[in-house]
Length: 158
Image (cartoon, rainbow, N blue to C red; front, side, top):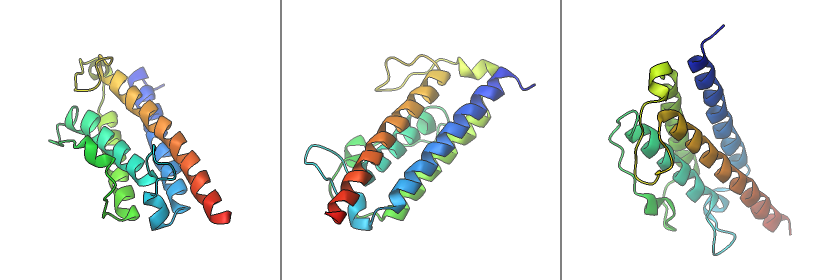
């Protein structure tokens, strides 16, 4: 039987992979224009949410645990003037998820509880906490994406 550390890492890895797969599947239903369209003036586009998740993972896991040197520009994740193509933005999300997975694979019984600090997460105390928080954050925005796809495709059919 595997030890608890590997069991936890494997479970979280599965979750991140599945979330990335779901986002890709949802994005495939959208045109390039729909990917960046904000159906409501107060909300975000699907593309903005993908950039936001990528930035979140690259900062909280990449910069803080993998020490990649990533510098987050959070306000740009929500900007309206993107020139990147949908496939490029999705590629960046996959790279961020791959980075998270690589860091998860090397966690041990000792490192899960290692102290964790970063700007914007005062409620997280250790590495396990940040992996869990980022997974929940990913899930939250995936739910928003599901709703956006429904709205955007309903606009086309009406």
